[in-house]
Length: 73
Image 1 (cartoon, rainbow, N blue to C red):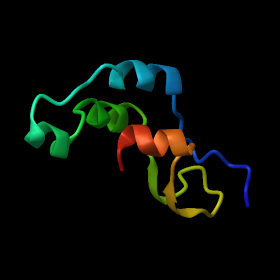
Image 2: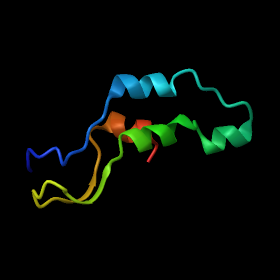
Image 3: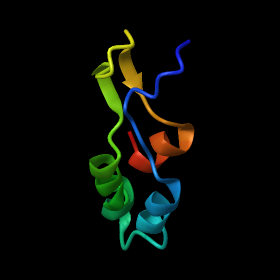
């Protein structure tokens, strides 16, 4: 395993601020989910493909499980 961060970042505190307090108004909203997940994915995308830093990694990479969950991938 490499120590490369693959250029991927995530701010858990900021993501939590975006996601907190959302409650679905109906069943359809519950199925679609919190619209703030899209903003999390936009601000802190995960890696999908080769590492831009050239470490040789090629795949899907999230900073942490919290990053993965906050982006609702």
